[in-house]
Image (cartoon, rainbow, N blue to C red; front, side):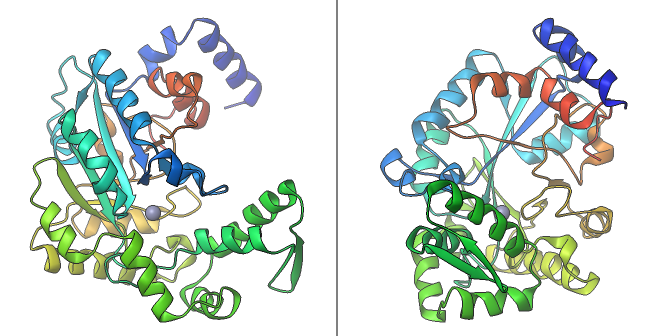
Length: 343
Ligand SMILES: [Zn+2]
């Protein structure tokens, strides 16, 4: 769509306070993406990664808002059933999902979800419970905070002022995210100078282990989903590497949890991190749903994109306006135009 026309329509949607956009693009369900749940005193230890965590208070206030507005909370299995049967009724639905498998999901998140009886999914990347996760987004933050200049792949980045540090973080982050498995291994050893022991220790501190996952897999509110073995941006992997990441991840989860794993989330999850090749492979493995990190709503017609469903990031910094635009369809239209699918 011509961007002039799109902006005109957007302006109209905004001027009419989302009334018309809600009719057209409000959808039947909204899926929200969280990562960590941390009290403010722990959350503010991070600067560039602060939005990876939501405080229990903010999570609770979002839940209370949805409850007040009459939304119904459903699990991904229930969402999948509604997509299949196309029986939605008059209600609108909310699904909560938490990516990666951080222990704080249970320490600080579960009491809130239990208080309001809200079902949620944790997408587990196997390297978390296996004790081999590269928390490179935290390592990079620490390195940039402590050094005044960073040399990465023969390029020297300034890292003195706060602004320089943020720019340097964002530039290097993008490069590391798009690494191949062998490049990531090399960076871990030589750029970050991490040892196997330090990696295992960090996983023990931050990640749910297999025993904890097995216990929570029987909780009536919790669904465990798959999120690949090692959390690579899939489009940057060869066919074989991509298949191994997804399939081995699913099989290992099922073996250790003695449960079928029916839901999947693409690591990093933007449309630059996963493509048709990956969606098709996920479909052929029998997953019922798969989610992206790409804004948009779920419609009664979304069965056709159940293997690439959109999600909204939710956090303490989600402004009231932005949040409102998620629910009234303005954000969906702004990102996806007339299409009810993310791609
Ligand atoms: Zn993830």
